[in-house]
Image (cartoon, rainbow over the protein chains, first blue to last red):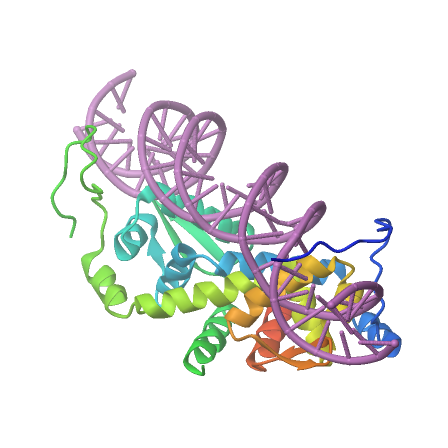
Length: 126
Length: 126
DNA sequence: ACAACATATGAATATATGTTCATATGTTAC
DNA sequence: GTAACATATGAACATATATTCATATGTTGT
């Protein structure tokens, strides 16, 4: 049986840490990412962190395609594909052009492919 | 060209698409990522798609640090840091070693840094 | 005008996930 | 043994997000 510990006064105002290596902490703190950079990275990686969007981007890395084709390739509904393409569009990861009734999508930034490659290297390398 | 047309009724059995470019679709389909690869990428990018974990990884990219230091550096609670470190540990993104009462974490895979670099290039390049 | 098609989108829902709180576990010193 | 400290973790909660459904918008052809 576990015992309860008598907690002395728990000042909840501050995080009362006692083990900080001050020099190390301040050194690393100074080299922090800017808030803007953190948010930017978060957005991109969040966009890449979904299997549907991964499949869409990978398909588009091969050729430009219309929404219907994309739906068929990844085996999901047109509605879902449209929704997810909008997410990718908002992040400037894909661009689109209209041709008659159809809308063709393609990659807007080839950096994405390098991220994929790096990611694949990682999952093989473990 | 386009295949059979289904009634535009509420037949929700199949995805009734009529605009498929068959050659293009089958070409791209053949070159699909394996399900395993998709899941692997999803896991990694999902892990990177959170600001707390981004800050943790970026801090660890500079030097090995204990949990307390990390909490101080990113300005969040010890509990949260521990939880998120476990996520990163499960994905083999960080490793840890015990030294007395403290546990020191460090990056387990330097590929991560390249992903960060690529990501940063992207957000600047738009 | 209309019908048919391709795509976009708002709303609803279910699930996933980040954060907090309380407490447990493990280590050192006494 | 107990106390103090550093870390880990289960549960609860709130928010975010993926997917589906129904419908709207835009385009072509008649």
